[in-house]
Length: 97
Image 1: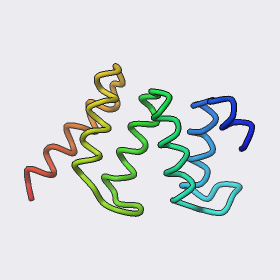
Image 2: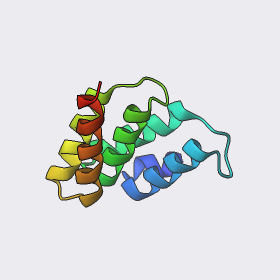
Image 3: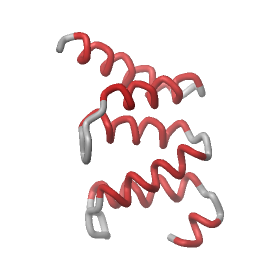
């Protein structure tokens, strides 16, 4: 993983973060997953923004729908079509509270 981070490879960061989230072939660790998603977001990767947004929306560590909405919006601005759907769901559910 150290090589991945040094190379700033967002694809690899997301794959490893997904493994940490699911516990697939590695011990489940939400903190490590979050760190990797955040690093990929710093590289302006819209997929990482969506995944980190889901992380906040579902509250894997801390629930923060405002932060989730911000991430979905930024990813949507970058053209990520999944982010549009996530943003709509997030806004709809928050309006129901």
